[in-house]
Length: 267
Image 1 (cartoon, one colour):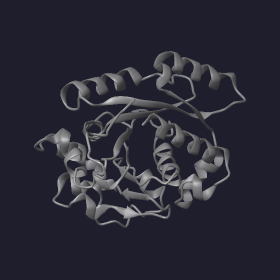
Image 2 (cartoon, one colour):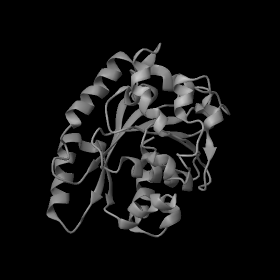
Image 3 (cartoon, one colour):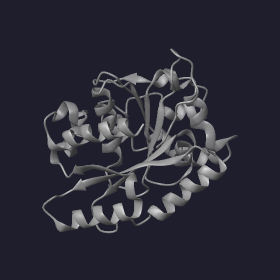
């Protein structure tokens, strides 16, 4: 169990639980999980900040924010003098707030190399706002570069989406090694908060075999909820909405609601 709650006096605000959604493989449902988990937590009455740290900006457009028309994004907080609170935007889902990303963020990996305290930039800019939210979800790029390292350094836990396909565990050893190194050198509190199986197809034996293999590897860290392969969930980003708005009664949306309840239970 990940515990972000420091010793607090009665009535004092508790800082958010910060979760980095990480997998260096693309196409595993990372941004879909970040967007829909944020919306589902908000449906439970939680206040959620979604930080888009992926230059592709999929979490940004997933909430209807035009990443091509923005003058500032999370890049300006990491490598400029813009306070993060000035970049936070409310979206259509009550309780969800987004720090957007644009393609400008693509240059951050190179610029961070020579930056002072380069691994802790995100952690520092999050500090002034972290007590205003119950959950902070960071959507990471599909790589283990400096942006992802920043997310891991700023987080309490790692949420790993794993696609129910062949080679599901491929690359996860490297990811876990990166988590171990960050825990050892930068963030002693970091833990693997959970593993979520995505794109599950109950019609195939392969999906269940992959789930069993991942559960053998990660044990109780794997959530009980299986996120099904869903055309409606895939369509939702093109309309700038999470599943809770675009397909509120769909199987995919229902699965993310159940996942949100599991997340709350683990905290």
